[in-house]
Image (cartoon, rainbow, N blue to C red):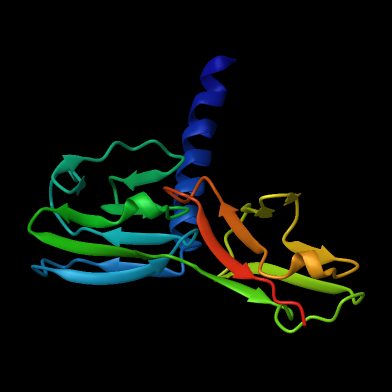
Length: 190
């Protein structure tokens, strides 16, 4: 009975690998090019194709890449290296055979929306913090010396004169980032 399931398991793995490569927005063929540069955003999927007639060995900055099926997926049949969710630490030079590609991971930009200058005492304000492009499963919080928020929205209700010149910092963290992103604003009250 166990022999019947073994071929089925192999078939499922092959289908999964094909779908993994098919879901990438960006596929870069090396085709023996001496050097290619490609830019991606954090969290995107990227695939590099190496065309060799023998064993495929991908390297990042000269170090062998292991096929871990979670982050790096190497399909030895097609010669494709797929990075499912690009992290900030994936920046570097990928090589396979004589080809190489320089991967540049673009850091997201923090966008703060809402009015936080020339506020009126007694009014209510809502200030939001997001990233562009957005980072899947990121955590966004507001911090100051006397305030912490567990959401991307900072609500000040009511605005008081004591809020004048108070600094609030938006902190974005994610497993895909090497370190948290921050953006600070200074509240001004008339």
